[in-house]
Length: 133
Image (cartoon, rainbow, N blue to C red; front, side, top):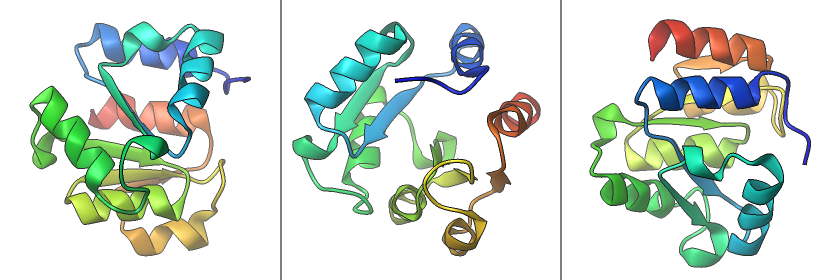
């Protein structure tokens, strides 16, 4: 599973800065474990929820469970996603979101979900996180 340029460094930097990161994915647990193994990034994430462990997106259950697991409030949570399902899940959970248009859905599909920002490539996302996180 190839990662966008800069992803590994950005995840490591956010982790080193004390940010807690989690994964809420439509993948199965087996698929996520394989992705963690291939990327070597497992240790940088505090918790994860998969589609085969509860309600599917855009139901807020995955985000709510992760917030509960980490003891974090909705006001201190940011969802980053590339689909309207991701951003609608954030809206349904009452958390802020950032959309990335270089994944599955474009700006026209993500904008109605009221993200704080739309990043058009990973460098753009990393720069936004750097100045807003």
